[in-house]
Image (cartoon, rainbow, N blue to C red; front, side, top):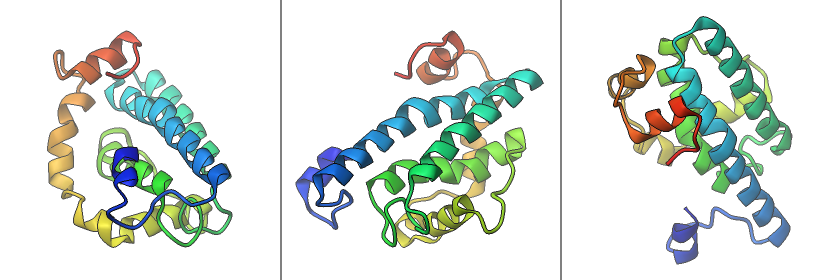
Length: 165
């Protein structure tokens, strides 16, 4: 994403202010280090207690991001989609399309900052144009939800406790 941002061929996703740019990069790193791996841990967990533990951790990591977001949004930095939103958008979509059917992930509570953010992202034209249908998500993630052996390098890394490849 930073490479594409540096090409400057479309609207800037990082703000011009150096401090806010750095903060956006830090929260993007948070998504990569804490949200994506826990998403897969939850999806691959077969034991109910592990599922509860991973779901609690995922909610906690999302809450940290929500607490750091602009108070009214609707996006991370305010009224316009930005770098952090684009980084998180695929995982926001997967909560409803993958974790809800496979792990019972709850819908966002109406009126919360998280619900406002989710709605804004899902309604964003660029997100809608690049999001697959529910069936493709279910089909693509079934092997992870069943934690089939040899599913992928990512699944092996999650199962062994290593960092994602």
